[in-house]
Amino acid sequence: MSAMWAMSRKADKPVIVLVRPQLGENIGKAARAMLNFGLAEMRLVEPRDGWPNPSAGPAASGADIVLQNAQVYSTTAEAVADCSHVYATTVRKRGVTKPVYTPDRAAGEIAGNVGRSAILFGPERSGLETEDVALARAIVTVPINPEFASLNLAQAVILVAYEWSKTQALEIPTEEELLPPAPQEDLEGMIHHFERLLEPKGYFRPAARAEATRRTLRGMLTKPGWNHLEVRTLRGILSALEKEDRK
Image (cartoon, rainbow, N blue to C red):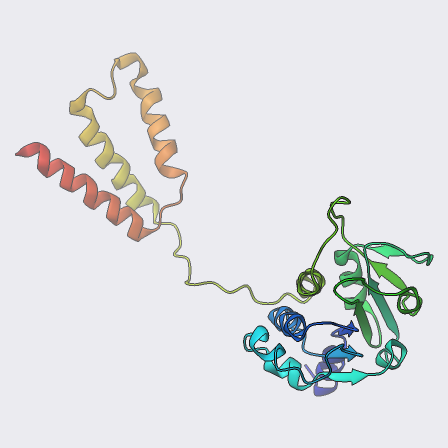
């Protein structure tokens, strides 16, 4: 990968623009949502309580880089002046006729856009004004309960940021590597161990049903895809039960 190509890919990340946000706490939560999904450029338009805001840092829970680099603008138009593609998040069209996208469709388009993309989010109480939406090429909205359309700012940001992250193949964190299934030899040993303990208990009677019962047992023990540690544990349990019977 060339340095020039890497820089162009970095520029493809959408800018998150919070228009007239009211609470510093919500700005911090939005920053946290952004950084979780690989977005770090936040722009603020006329934040109600000014900027920087002491309430934002604690709410960001470590996403300080987003807050430190946040830029403040006087108007929404100025905030998106260098962006070729602008998307407005809103639950209704507000009288503006524009294409309406779901977050996943918008994310797919943004990932393929040439030039900068910006996503607008409105104030907590009222959402974007018609003048803000007019700057956008498309509206982004989600199917939501019409009787309770009440996403908070951070929730709206995380919905859009998550859909964008899916286009970038971000690494899925795992706590540990999964062990592969145990070799067939180990599995066969476990199945025969079960059969050896069950046989004297009369489990495979009547004789006419013995073969079908064995197949069912084999199917149950084969289905989970036990790894070698799990097989060893089960064999240990069976051995313990076997010793108990011999007393």
